[in-house]
Image (cartoon, rainbow, N blue to C red; front, top):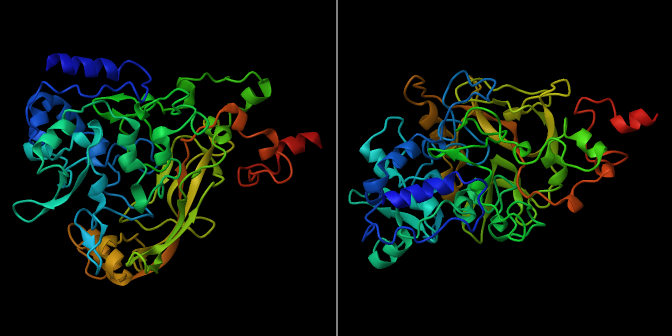
Length: 469
């Protein structure tokens, strides 16, 4: 077993990884039958403990890049978003419609655990809750089943087929693109609904779709850029609370120098314009993405026999552009909402300005929504969305979400009168990098009809036009 561990360690630090580099079938000789995470712990106790402390398991982490982090450990588990709002009241369980079809299974569907909520204190129970195969076994699939006590748990779909399960469990490798995309491309309720730039198409794309991941280009795995150690993965988007690897931000300059072009005029842009701004002209190129989610207006879907928020989907979206210096501002739970000049509440806002020399212009998915706030305290209220998908009762869903968030502990609230507010979130666009021949050209930004809002970026007018006057 020692040789297998050494091999994986060498691969992990060997530099930018290609999708095909991760070897399969590395565990054929190391165990006979897969009997759950306990089988992995027999040799990988240390690795499991490191994973337990990571954001992929804890769903919270250090917040040095939040200007209002105040030393708190924050993340998906204890903040609110404008998609399915919060895992608190939506953790696990099959929700079915009147036809018996499964509509939702809870936020834990994309947690690298087997059903228990992550706890901050390490224990054997928590280690055995880690689902190693979700990130490390090609072809692995799981579904919700009941345990001996009748509680829902995630199990491999082959749990009754020991030979089949053994075959999959021995097909171990470093994470490949399709393994990461299982959760990151399907989050938010549908293919590409949430991120916009993380599409299933990236699993088998060409260079024109993404110069890094294209099979005829660099053919890189996600871990080629998102490197790290001890299961701490580098890379924090503008709308993420926690940071797995505090320190210098992951940028293109780590592989490409600050003057990568042959043209001085283009290289001059890199001081104030992020590479992604020019090299990702649009996002949601294959699957439409969720651009507006209004929870105040339930929408009935007759064919699917379900309800949802009113969702506006768009495809081939031109990004919004804003200054970003690597810092963000979060609207936290249990704090009065901060209303911006445009009347919206910023769920997560990039920080920076034209005067900030550490900021660059970045592309963003500007997601808008409508969420409830407590009428008196003005706190955001999470929504118990799972049952809502079946019954469409949004008032009940808001009150149940409020009870889960504020009905116990230090809050102990009993009243949950609420009203609706418009919200927005800036989500960084980083994937789907086009080759130079498909990058933005000068007139895409400069000149009449250009895509940049120069006034919003702190310029009186287009700086090129101004210099020509």
